[in-house]
Length: 260
Ligand code: ADP
Ligand code: MG
Image (cartoon, rainbow, N blue to C red; front, top):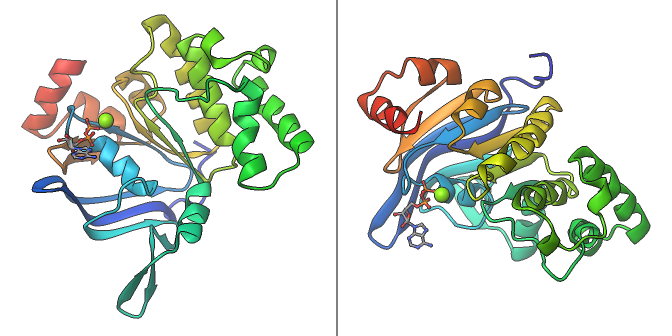
């Protein structure tokens, strides 16, 4: 597709990433690359480490081995010669500003209106003026089809609408990378389509995205790259149409036969 740019220039690079919780090695040896403008879909059984991997990219967990980069910056560390130095909280916060994340549960602030939810981080973290942030929030709400809900409270919106607000809220920080962790799994089936449509438009606009999902139709139609994870390892990856129609590994076949 023509929207692709900077091909071959990684946005996210994981090399031999290891993550443990106590004696439980959740990510065993993950090496992956997500290029600029690419949509990577991450699938796999529950407990395989998908959320943990996203959380490592976004500094919600720290890794125990390997290396993780977003563009040319190590996540959480600075390298000098052979030595790694942990970033300060302020530096970590700076790195995180460029990464948007949307969770399964919409976790909007319930006591704030939709527009207040969206302008909260840009005004507080980035020091944007309220008027400018509000104008931008209205543009984003229009983009996700919810311009008429600006003054509503989250509790008065459907799950699908709340999730679209959550996407607009993440976009308000002008992220260079968007992470989605099963964004439609908690939604009633009839609300899933609108959220996937917003994500598809975002992909077409050139946003780099990592999407953990069970929506195989989305993975096939929108994904550029599909990764199947199981028990903390990448079992199989490649072109989504290839992997979904012609999986090479038995574990992939058995997983797909259960979800397709
Ligand atoms: P997935 O998203 O693929 O379902 P997760 O990344 O959520 O998998 O979890 C992978 C494994 O890590 C599971 O065994 C889970 O119990 C464990 N795990 C995840 N988060 C924590 C945590 N904060 N503390 C301890 N164990 C955790
Ligand atoms: Mg998960």
